[in-house]
Image 1 (cartoon, rainbow, N blue to C red):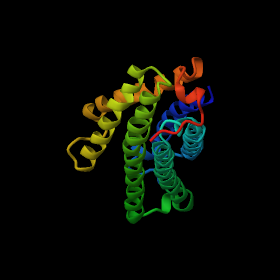
Image 2 (image 1 turned 180 degrees about the vertical axis):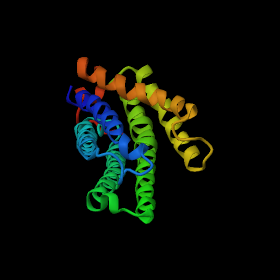
Image 3 (image 1 turned 60 degrees about the vertical axis):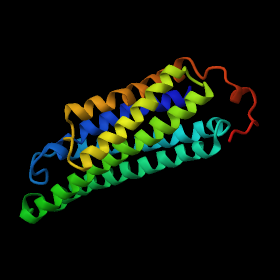
Image 4 (image 1 turned 135 degrees about the vertical axis):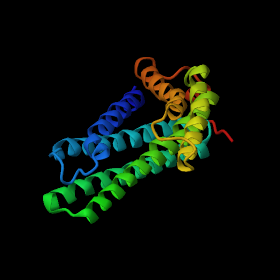
Length: 224
C-alpha cells in the first residue's frame, strides 16, 4: 500500500510541478515579465516531493524485488537515483532563473535573457533525460521485468512496463537527435503505455496489494 501511494504521489507532484513551472518554461523573458515567483517556488516544492516519492518507491521495493533478482533490484534503485538527479538539476535551473529575476528585474540586459534561455533549456533537457529517458529503463524495463517474473502483479499489467519502457527510451533518443519534436503527437503516443503502467501499478498496489508469489512466502530464496 505504501508503494502504491508513493507511485500515485509521483503522478500528482510531477504534473503539478510541470504546470506550475509554466511561467518560466513558456515566457520569452521571465526575468522582466509578470511576477510568478511564488507559483514557481511552489512548483519547486512539488519537485522536491517528487524526489522523495521516487526514492521511497525504490527503498520500499528493494527488499522485495531482491528476492527475485538482487542485481536488477539494485539497478532499479540506481535508476531512481539517477532520475532524481536529473530532476534536481532541473529544479536548480528553474530556481536560478527566479534568482536572476529577484536580483536584476528590470535592470536585466540582453545577456541575461540569453542566460535565462540557457537555464530553461537545461531544465527541459534534464526533464527529457530523467522522466523522459531513465524512467523507461528503471520503471519500464527493470521494474516491469521484475514484476512480470515474480508475479507480484498480473503479468498483463507488467507487460505495459516492458512495452512502455523501450518506447520512452526510443522517443527520448529521437528527440535528442531532433528526429521527433518535444511535445509532439509521436512523443505523446510513446508515453501512453508507460503512463498507464505506473498509474495502474499505483492503484493496484494501493487498493489490492501484491499478488501471492513464491518470493513472498520464502524471503531467503535467492534468484540468479
